[in-house]
Image (cartoon, rainbow, N blue to C red; front, side, top):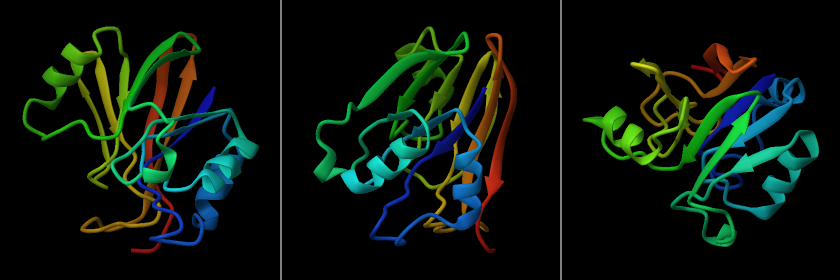
Length: 162
Protein backbone atom coordinates (compact mmCIF):
# COMPACT_ATOMS: atom_id res chain seq x y z
CA UNK A 1 0.00 0.00 0.00
CA UNK A 2 1.30 3.42 -0.96
CA UNK A 3 0.59 6.16 1.61
CA UNK A 4 1.15 9.82 0.70
CA UNK A 5 1.89 12.06 3.69
CA UNK A 6 1.31 15.80 3.89
CA UNK A 7 1.48 18.43 6.62
CA UNK A 8 1.50 22.19 6.81
CA UNK A 9 0.00 22.84 3.39
CA UNK A 10 -1.49 26.17 4.57
CA UNK A 11 -3.63 26.44 1.43
CA UNK A 12 -4.63 29.11 0.35
CA UNK A 13 -2.38 31.27 2.58
CA UNK A 14 1.04 29.92 1.53
CA UNK A 15 0.03 28.74 -1.95
CA UNK A 16 -3.10 28.48 -4.06
CA UNK A 17 -2.56 24.75 -4.50
CA UNK A 18 0.09 22.04 -4.17
CA UNK A 19 3.01 21.83 -6.59
CA UNK A 20 2.34 19.60 -9.61
CA UNK A 21 4.92 17.08 -8.35
CA UNK A 22 2.91 16.65 -5.14
CA UNK A 23 -0.34 16.08 -7.05
CA UNK A 24 1.39 13.44 -9.18
CA UNK A 25 2.47 11.54 -6.05
CA UNK A 26 -0.97 11.86 -4.47
CA UNK A 27 -2.62 10.37 -7.58
CA UNK A 28 -0.59 7.17 -7.12
CA UNK A 29 -1.45 6.75 -3.41
CA UNK A 30 -4.04 4.40 -1.94
CA UNK A 31 -4.32 6.58 1.20
CA UNK A 32 -3.45 10.18 2.08
CA UNK A 33 -2.45 11.37 5.55
CA UNK A 34 -2.49 15.06 6.47
CA UNK A 35 -0.87 16.04 9.78
CA UNK A 36 -2.54 19.42 10.19
CA UNK A 37 -2.58 23.03 9.07
CA UNK A 38 -4.83 22.28 6.11
CA UNK A 39 -6.80 25.56 6.64
CA UNK A 40 -9.93 24.96 4.54
CA UNK A 41 -12.66 22.39 4.04
CA UNK A 42 -12.34 22.99 0.28
CA UNK A 43 -8.77 21.71 0.24
CA UNK A 44 -9.71 18.72 2.44
CA UNK A 45 -12.46 17.91 -0.07
CA UNK A 46 -9.94 18.07 -2.93
CA UNK A 47 -7.72 15.55 -1.16
CA UNK A 48 -10.68 13.27 -0.38
CA UNK A 49 -11.47 13.15 -4.11
CA UNK A 50 -8.03 11.64 -4.77
CA UNK A 51 -7.87 8.89 -2.11
CA UNK A 52 -9.19 8.02 1.36
CA UNK A 53 -7.95 10.68 3.77
CA UNK A 54 -6.91 10.68 7.43
CA UNK A 55 -6.37 14.19 8.82
CA UNK A 56 -5.76 15.88 12.16
CA UNK A 57 -6.28 19.48 13.21
CA UNK A 58 -3.33 21.84 13.27
CA UNK A 59 -2.92 25.04 15.25
CA UNK A 60 -4.03 27.10 12.21
CA UNK A 61 -7.09 24.99 11.38
CA UNK A 62 -9.66 27.39 12.85
CA UNK A 63 -12.21 26.54 10.14
CA UNK A 64 -11.72 22.79 10.74
CA UNK A 65 -12.61 22.48 14.43
CA UNK A 66 -14.31 19.13 13.67
CA UNK A 67 -10.98 17.47 12.85
CA UNK A 68 -9.52 15.44 15.74
CA UNK A 69 -6.32 16.56 17.46
CA UNK A 70 -4.96 13.02 17.34
CA UNK A 71 -5.77 9.89 15.36
CA UNK A 72 -4.74 6.29 15.88
CA UNK A 73 -5.50 3.77 13.14
CA UNK A 74 -4.19 0.68 11.38
CA UNK A 75 -3.30 0.38 7.70
CA UNK A 76 -2.14 -2.94 6.25
CA UNK A 77 -1.25 -4.20 9.74
CA UNK A 78 0.82 -1.10 10.59
CA UNK A 79 -0.26 0.97 13.62
CA UNK A 80 -0.27 4.72 12.98
CA UNK A 81 -0.61 7.67 15.32
CA UNK A 82 -0.99 11.17 13.96
CA UNK A 83 -0.69 14.52 15.74
CA UNK A 84 0.14 17.99 14.45
CA UNK A 85 2.63 19.15 17.07
CA UNK A 86 4.89 16.51 18.61
CA UNK A 87 6.66 19.07 20.78
CA UNK A 88 10.38 19.80 21.09
CA UNK A 89 12.98 17.59 19.44
CA UNK A 90 14.52 16.71 22.80
CA UNK A 91 13.00 13.45 24.09
CA UNK A 92 10.44 13.39 21.24
CA UNK A 93 10.73 9.62 20.77
CA UNK A 94 10.15 8.94 24.48
CA UNK A 95 7.15 11.29 24.58
CA UNK A 96 5.58 9.79 21.46
CA UNK A 97 6.17 6.21 22.64
CA UNK A 98 4.53 7.01 25.97
CA UNK A 99 1.58 8.80 24.34
CA UNK A 100 1.12 6.20 21.58
CA UNK A 101 2.37 2.87 23.02
CA UNK A 102 0.95 0.74 20.18
CA UNK A 103 2.23 2.90 17.30
CA UNK A 104 4.68 1.67 14.69
CA UNK A 105 4.85 5.15 13.18
CA UNK A 106 3.98 8.63 14.47
CA UNK A 107 3.19 11.15 11.74
CA UNK A 108 3.37 14.82 12.70
CA UNK A 109 3.98 18.28 11.28
CA UNK A 110 4.08 21.83 12.69
CA UNK A 111 7.80 22.58 12.34
CA UNK A 112 7.97 22.29 8.51
CA UNK A 113 11.19 20.32 9.12
CA UNK A 114 11.23 16.90 7.41
CA UNK A 115 12.05 14.02 9.74
CA UNK A 116 12.33 10.36 8.78
CA UNK A 117 14.01 8.51 11.61
CA UNK A 118 13.65 5.36 13.61
CA UNK A 119 14.05 5.42 17.38
CA UNK A 120 14.22 1.74 18.31
CA UNK A 121 11.10 0.31 16.65
CA UNK A 122 9.20 3.62 16.29
CA UNK A 123 9.29 5.62 13.05
CA UNK A 124 9.04 9.37 13.63
CA UNK A 125 7.85 10.93 10.37
CA UNK A 126 7.33 14.61 9.53
CA UNK A 127 6.88 15.17 5.78
CA UNK A 128 7.85 18.85 5.97
CA UNK A 129 5.75 21.25 3.90
CA UNK A 130 4.99 21.19 0.16
CA UNK A 131 4.11 24.92 0.16
CA UNK A 132 6.22 26.69 2.82
CA UNK A 133 9.80 25.54 3.21
CA UNK A 134 10.73 28.16 5.83
CA UNK A 135 14.41 27.41 6.59
CA UNK A 136 14.50 24.12 4.67
CA UNK A 137 16.24 23.81 1.31
CA UNK A 138 13.20 22.38 -0.50
CA UNK A 139 9.45 21.92 -0.41
CA UNK A 140 8.70 18.33 0.62
CA UNK A 141 6.11 15.66 1.30
CA UNK A 142 6.33 12.05 2.44
CA UNK A 143 5.69 8.65 0.99
CA UNK A 144 5.37 5.37 2.89
CA UNK A 145 5.22 1.92 1.33
CA UNK A 146 3.47 -0.67 3.52
CA UNK A 147 3.40 -4.42 3.07
CA UNK A 148 1.89 -6.98 5.46
CA UNK A 149 2.40 -5.01 8.66
CA UNK A 150 5.84 -3.72 7.69
CA UNK A 151 7.02 -0.32 6.55
CA UNK A 152 9.00 -1.33 3.48
CA UNK A 153 10.03 2.20 2.57
CA UNK A 154 9.73 5.64 4.16
CA UNK A 155 10.94 8.64 2.22
CA UNK A 156 10.85 12.41 2.15
CA UNK A 157 10.32 13.59 -1.41
CA UNK A 158 11.25 17.05 -2.73
CA UNK A 159 8.29 18.53 -4.64
CA UNK A 160 9.45 22.07 -5.22
CA UNK A 161 12.42 24.16 -6.17
CA UNK A 162 15.36 24.84 -3.92
